[in-house]
Length: 622
Image 1 (tube, rainbow, N blue to C red):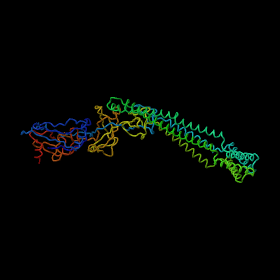
Image 2 (cartoon, rainbow, N blue to C red):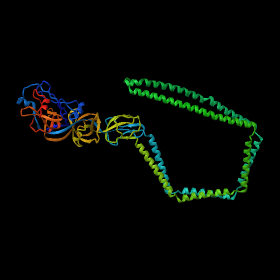
Image 3 (cartoon, rainbow, N blue to C red):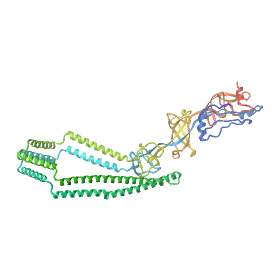
Image 4 (cartoon, rainbow, N blue to C red):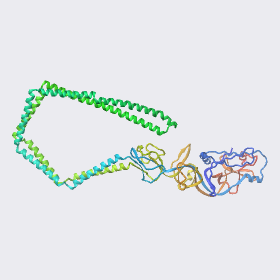
């Protein structure tokens, strides 16, 4: 069996008019069928394009076994003409075929910078937007309040700085001078000694404390005991009301509410559990299940709230009873004391008050002590210092500190302004809204701004895409023939009769492997047909390569191999097939380029004479 040679995957256009067509030269001359023509197979299905590329690249061996019918007749001259074709010289354009997918040049899912609810959504699917255009606005009441607070503080700090820089007002100086005058008058009074009315007041205070001491020594009166008994009864009544009154009723009501909320929560949970399989089976709409889930969450929230309310009431009742019990204990102790008479510690306290009153009277009668005069002098000195500060104005360090406070307040205002701006979701570039994932009122969480994604996430509001391009994957064997800026012909499955133009934009610097095949990603910019080509479409690509002048070509079925050497069969002097080595180049649809070993006009066999087998021809070849 003779195997066809490895071939380049480059496809070539003849005379710049014929379309490149990926085909495999795999041919047989059936046994017992003389002079049967070799013809290429029909175009391979698109799903097998990579396998064909591997065959053309020589990675797969294609059997080209030729069987001859047993016959002893010799070919005639006219029969030779029908079994051979001439080597032709043609002008060729190399085309490398591939497949690809139309994709956006740039695609992002837009999300807010902070968690919140969507207040307004300004776009719909299919809308065109400009760079910087507001797509959605999040709720911003909290941020607006914080901004207003920051601006108010800035205004206050600015006013304080202006006051310091402008100096003290005359009324402030007058007030400081008045405080100094008052301090000096007090000092003069202390230095002059006590007045008559002060002595009289001290003597009256002593008489009052002595009377209180005498009363305590005499013991409690009947009316005082009765008053103590009444206070004790009142405290006991308040305690009893707290133990059996309205608070206990409120606790009972809260317990009833908990039972009701618990039953409602269990009921809604059962509904959700029962209807969830129906949604999966398609028998119930997702919106209906969402409503049931919402009802369950509401019921759970009410149950939690009722439990918290009960706990608060119980803790409040416990604390109240504890306080009222303490009050009862105090009144009981006081009543017991009244019944037993005045305690010794009460008499001791009264005796101390009498001693203090005597000391005060002696002091005012004898004049002020030196330490009181020193204290009054210190107050005068402080008042003088404050007056001097008012008259001299603020110190430089005070102005510097005030300016720093203003800078901090301004920074806080700018920060809150940025926070408010961040509630607006803007388009990072001009493009088209391809998907809308959220609606007005939906709660979304922050994500990386303009992060690339191809499906909805819990953080996405809309998907934005810009322009389209083709992403192709080219085998390693062909990548050397692909250059940036190279012309590309694009044919979409949706428009098989239209050929759009493009150019190579970028070739990936690193290869990828798919099913053990080494491929390079190639990005193709679309020059024409953007109105037709939409994201996600499958397309066929033909990379237009170098132009070859007077290239020699023969049908691919004419190529045979002999012990790994590529060649063709040519007529010898007796018009019999003879193996001749050749060097092949690019595949030309159903033809192949001859680089060496043949010249234009040479005839090569595409069919074998009757009765001949390729194995015998090769075996007898000298």
